[in-house]
Image (cartoon, rainbow, N blue to C red; front, side, top):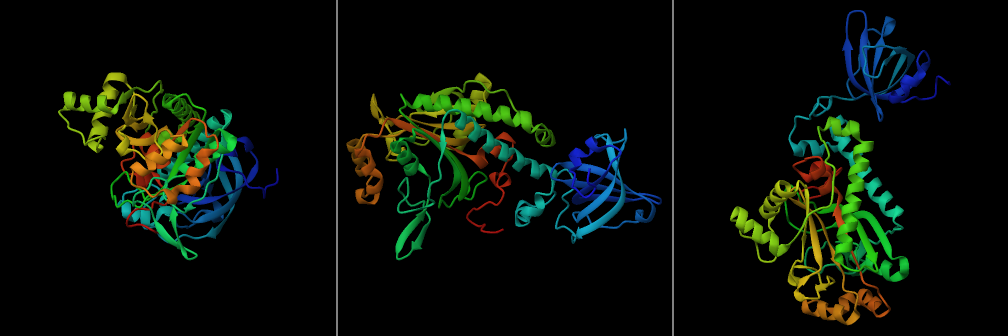
Length: 431
């Protein structure tokens, strides 16, 4: 092969006794009297490089970018079975001392300091593994839905109104008018159903102007949205999400075994998720834990306790909570036909944290108008949305999964910011 053609560290075992060109970062240098050892890392892994002769006293700071060439030699001393005997090494870009050590197993620094130097923290293998797994989650999400005849859509993030009403939207001036950052692609998902696509999904940022500063809240996060037309009921959506998550977990297990090993995570084999109505969940919390719940909802402690109960009784890290009250759900949520005080809606709780909200939508024009008015919202603000429902919109519904929360729960990460490449919260706009 051309000795100037770059080879990745993971490919070196295919080139034993050949001279190869490697490019990457210095993970560590160890200088002995007659030889030096450099651990080189690139996007595919690490390899030991042996420097002798004139290169014995090679000096370089960790994390410097380098290019080297050398012969691939078999060795039983390395897990990969090979090492590089270097004949030339060039520093492409030296590194100044790092603000924290990234080459240990864990970064020993305050989370704010880590996030202030986010790019550098990602040089750490464990941190890098989080986002490799997150990428695979999205890939599996898209793959499963495409195989089920879903179409990927791309919707505006600048809108004329919030999808859910209320005050938790970011306002901004827009050429003499007022615009909002999208809370959700909800209206556009429904419009695409009415356009005839029937099955759509999107992976995109959404924005919530909520002054939460907790370990599970972000003001910008990635939402994996799904909408389905011609459904027979909201249970169909729950079944779809259940199967979708089984596929995602299987794909992560198959494709990210090294990353999971680094993070010391063993993913379970998923099965059918248990489901409880909100009233049933509240009853269990009172009976089993003497825990009262807020009217028409579960609080954070309630979500944790109901997850503990479900794990013990059903060996499932997931549980659907269904039938939230009408006054706690957005105006587009379908009321239950047997009792209009409740809705055909659900949340999915994963290890004590809500990662999904979903349900059936109102598809009848007059019913939707009535619902908007009942919420105290101004009809004219939603005209471009409601007008569509005069033109034959089928029964439909969907759900949205918070990518960062799903990642954090899957990998036992305590703060969702650690599962976010560049988190945006009440205090953070950089880097």
